[in-house]
Image 1 (cartoon, rainbow, N blue to C red):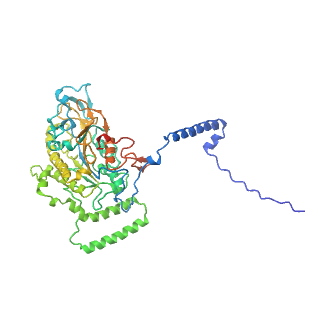
Image 2: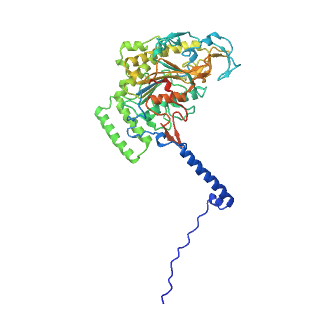
Image 3: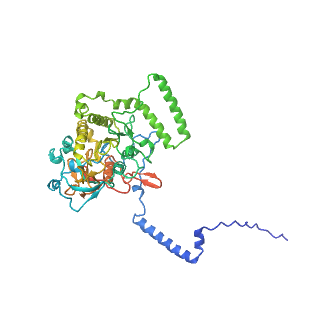
Length: 508
């Protein structure tokens, strides 16, 4: 007889504790309830997927550029054919009054010194007084006959080259948030400037100068300062580099006590150390950005010093811009900034942001914030802005740069058609104001949108800063709905979840 066989039985496995959901499913009522809702969710998902509403397809999903952190400024492809190769953004800090400059309202003249219809109006600084006609006369300009005021007569001479958006709106009536939105798309701090987005997406054709340069007014920076050119959550390499004709990039010249050979040997040794550091820390964007910045600084020892040196500009060019105007020092200094902007653009810098007006000097003293004595303040600011910007437009056109350069002239919001009660100035107005574009891919002469009969609120083809940004991105070959950066669980965009391209402004 064979001894009885003993089959090995598997040892019992320790039971795992049930989750809360598991305990609930052991209850009949909970099982039936969750089963029903689960089936409903499956059915809903199937229906959404069938109609293409569940999520963006890969063809419509986010587009993030492939960036070599060791060469963050290398040129990258566009999403579609670009009209503009570079952008000049002229920012008038303090809120330039549209009703005194570009937005002609005959009814405001006829109803001068009468109450704004609709009753007593309280705005940013308080109660408003009566409607006040434009403080400068409007006249037809150029062959198109566009009505522009005598406040900025030389810019007005370029009316045939300008595309006006008279129905711009903003989300804030306060300078800080307003400046933030115009440059970053958001009223809050902590978002990248539009120049950072463009250079993040496209890099730069110029490898000897920064891809994005911010040129502060010689009198100081605007209210939110570096927010305009800060890269925020984008890689640090794409922040703007601020300098102007008064304060050029520092430390570009080799000290006399260091020989050229020692300087070269030191840089080569530093490059060896940098390469070792990068090999030990792959994917460290901050380190790669810092190394790239130092390498660019080395190249800038030649290119940076050269671009900031206006000594090779002709006397006629200096006179054309007003850079030799000894009677108006602030005008001549701003004029030199305008020449610097042109020199950067013609050397292939992708994005230049040129500021007119500063905050530190106080309300309306160094900027366009005309609350109390608007006429007296604007008669100081207008000559500083007018001739240099007009000359910059003419110079870009004469050199052929306007064909593939987009120029945008903006301010954070407009001003009221009324005077503030007890003052001779106008309060903030985000409900309707004017910006203009010129150059690559833009219809000109052209006017789009309109404010009401007094210039108070946008009423026709109402536009927003989101549309402006979407249009600028479109012109440089970028899809504003797909250009994104994943941050804190969100696909961030310059235009957030808003905006459309203003195709009406574009040439066919």
